[in-house]
Image (cartoon, rainbow, N blue to C red; front, side):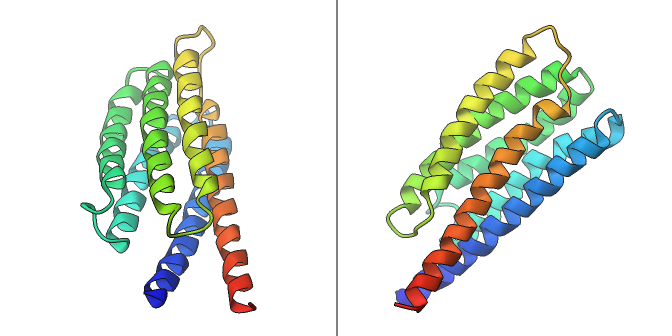
Amino acid sequence: MQSQSFTQSNWLRSYYFARAIFSIAWVAGAILFNGQPGLTAFLLVIYPAWDALANLVDARVNGGLRTNSSQALNVVVSTITALAVIVAVSNSMYAVLAVFGAWAILSGLLQLNTGARRWRYHSAQWPMILSGVQSALAGGFMISRSLGTVAPTILDIAPYAGFGAFYFLLSAIWLVVAAYRKANA
């Protein structure tokens, strides 16, 4: 059991680092390619698609989709979101922001659930729980902005991704420190 816990902690550390690196790269791309329609559209679609893939892989590594129902649902929600973004991009950035807002609420609540469930077995889940709550709140903000008069851009979504990167990085570092302390205890 301890070996399995060690393996899962190593997995989570690598997973959280990968999620942080992707989000940092995505934010950099959003800043660099803002105003370039094709690249912006690609970034907007790839973000929820990556989330779906990441949740799928993580759930499979940690007991499968049946064991991780919140992640299984997040895979479905994020996949549908990626498809909805494809449609929304051809409509307007207002529509894109509304889709991202709805996704942020749903995926945030699902991440909150995953973090709370993992709390019993792994350290470093409090940033995931906070991230889930903040994601849901950010989703409400994005929806309100999608109803406004100021034309949104990808830069309205970049802070959401940036905070996600921060929380994933914080969790990864927390797991590194916890492993170090445990090894030296």
